[in-house]
Image (cartoon, rainbow, N blue to C red; front, side, top):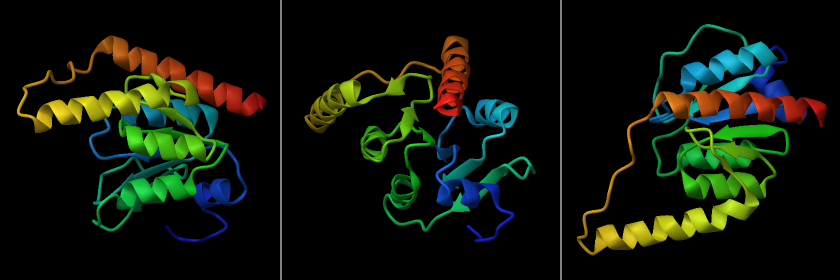
Amino acid sequence: MTATRNNPILLSIMTDRRHILVDADACPVKEEIYKVALRHSVPVAIVSNSYMRLPEHPLIERVIVSDGFDAADDHIAETAHDKSVVITADILLAERCLKAGARVLSHDGRPFTEDSIGAAIATRAIMADLRGGGNQVGHNPPYSKTDRSRFLSTLDEVLVRLTRG
């Protein structure tokens, strides 16, 4: 990330203004994020371990971190604050960002909250134990139009609420 005064992402982070941080690896809603963010004039940081093609726009920034374990998660968690919206499917990253005061959404538009994160972590642990024991457990259902619609609506609502304070 380059430190310039003309960088809207850096300026938003440094001045605690609204911005969106995206855990970009395997994120199925990047196009939807751009659409909503540009409508609200909110900067977006796409954080990943490798190069990704992004639309050329001053509000959309590519942040490439090292390929170290959890490097993208660490960057997002360290950057998040109370005006951040974090998009991730990673439950442990969601917990870290909630502790920083950020709003956190899953790819299907369901918010992670202080009330829901404990149950999500417990479910994750149970599923890991089942898989570790050799049990075959179900996979996530395919991403649907309903998921996409819910995501668009929820992201829009969160950005409106952040604007109003």
